[in-house]
Image (cartoon, rainbow, N blue to C red; front, side):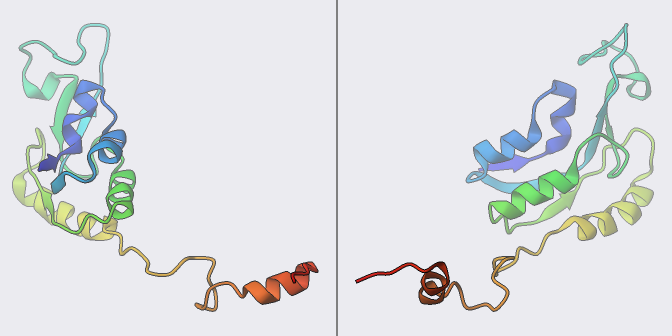
Amino acid sequence: MISNDPSHFPPQQLDYLAFVDIYEERISAFHVKHAEFNPNGRQGVHSGYRPWMHRAARFRSLGDGHVDFVGVFSKLGQYGYDSRAALEWECIMKSPDQDAAEGAPSIADHVIEVTEAAFDDFAGEGPNIEAIRSLMGWKYD
């Protein structure tokens, strides 16, 4: 089983949405934490031994980084993920209390209740094949 933590992908320059597509059957946990990657002419993925506050790749609070959580929650909903989304605090700036106060409502706002009905099935009864054939003028023996 895999714990999906998209915050580890931007610093490595990996596609976290493709990861969900590839490993969706194995994802059993989901850590919600942001990360940002701001390379410049002197530092990139590894950032050397600089303090966390000054690194190009660093963890942030939910809403403060570069992870597309609308996309992540959509992918997880698409594949029927029905486990928890755990807020993980490792922000270099915000306190854990502020992170929790802002992050928990944000997660609740992102959770997708996947529909049971098709968006184009307005009557909820499925297609009437005979009516369609009649309208189209199709004749069958």
